[in-house]
Length: 381
Ligand code: PMP
Image (cartoon, rainbow, N blue to C red):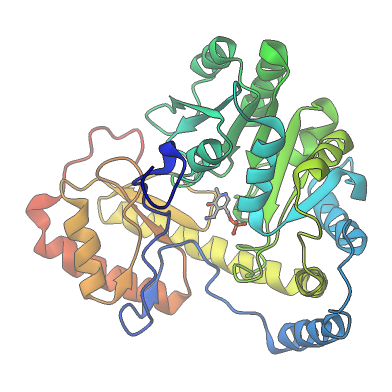
């Protein structure tokens, strides 16, 4: 056996990770959809005293059921559904990445299948691989929406135990129509009784009038809606993701979670940040305005841009997207080379960061004018 004795299917695989460059290497960081605004001084003070209080208790294990945090998260989520959310419907873990892994540990596994529709979040196949769940990816339509007939056919053929779909989608920014969520839940329940995970990591950034799937929970007991504090709550470093679902689903996850998986510090800090929700969501509104301006500007420059309900947008198409990505980095602007061929993804930053991005892109695409492909059709413009 070779050294180290890694599982056969993991040999030679590179660990996931977007390039993490220092601020000296790339002063404008628009590559991992972070919130550019740090917490306010009042929020920082509150977090610091919450962490200090938690520090005094660190000789003890934390509340395994994180009751206070579940209550606060349920109250927060209740804003997005007329039906309300109760604490028994809420589960949390260290980032929605861990929530998703736990979902696959509990509901995937050998002999079971997880389905998504590409382009989709690049971590999903990794959760499937790590839990020995078979991975099947259908395709989205040309405009990145879901082709409902094709989706239903795939679900009927594959009988997945888990369907994973980000809404808004990463990397395209596309939100799912309520009709799509409804169809996915019904088709998955009928095909084999699986669950449908609507990953709303970017849910708070959706445009006015776009509903959250949370409102559909009473209709579908197999619907799971995940959220994170990494984006809207400017808490990527906090590592707190959560979900709302049928209490039976939360109960089932308790079987696979590690004991005391949410540290006392995490719980205390997340609670403190939730107390500052109005201030943090005010920043989200600023970012939504900045996002819409970015989409409009990119279109004015003749780029194709996918409609975005997230804090990033996908634009293109470039014959040599790597050259554009590298050109931007040479100007100190780091974005993400991801998505279908020819597209690039840029996160929404502060007005100053977006000005730097616009100036750099204008120079880079000017230099590379011949590399810019003409849009294939006007439908997406
Ligand atoms: N889902 C989607 C669609 C994401 O883009 C991300 C992060 N980029 C996550 C989940 C995970 O976020 P976190 O673990 O920080 O909550």
